[in-house]
Amino acid sequence: MAALIDRALLGRHTLTPAGDPEGLLGTLPTISTALLGSLAGDWLRWLPRDPRRVPWLIAAGGAASGAGLMWALVFPLNKALWTGSYVLFTGGIAALLLAACCAMFDRGHSRRWAQPFVWLGVNALAIYFLAELCGHLLDAPWSAADAQTMTLRTWIFWDALSPAMPGVPDEALSLGFALLTVALWTGVAGVLYRRDIRIQV
Image 1 (cartoon, one colour):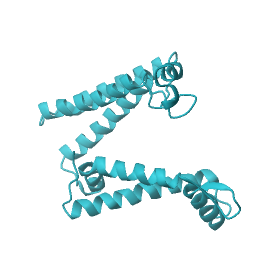
Image 2: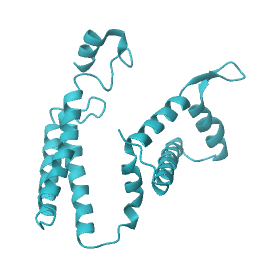
Image 3: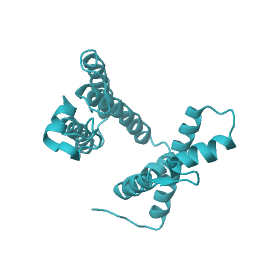
Image 4: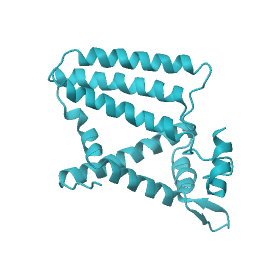
């Protein structure tokens, strides 16, 4: 249904001929995801020192993720379509993680381990934009010496990483590449933070 609506209203402007992963029908549940985070943040600010906020977050997170799993029996969890069941399940998991962070911070535990998240949060849009831009550059097609069309990402993965690590499964290499990418952009965010550079809209 999502692909049919996208093709009918957007025509050839969809990302792929089959449809668009950020299509029109997926926009409403995506907004719901953002609103869940906003409501949780407002609620935490409303009760800054209330000891009940962690148990309430745990209860809300458990209820939401459980409801998402139950709904998934008839409306599957699907990130590409951003289904309502996916919104509830992932929102519930996020609430449980937020409750764990609140519990640690409220009890006076060291926050040094969370510093990379502060770096990323201060310049979140800038880091996201730069990561997306570099991702598109890595995926830009070019012709190799043998006239085969490839991208820089495929060259790095198949011609540099894979031969350098024989015997390592492709899945492990892919995970390693993704983790290195996250580490790289976290490092860039750290440099911006230490130099007191704030790029905001």
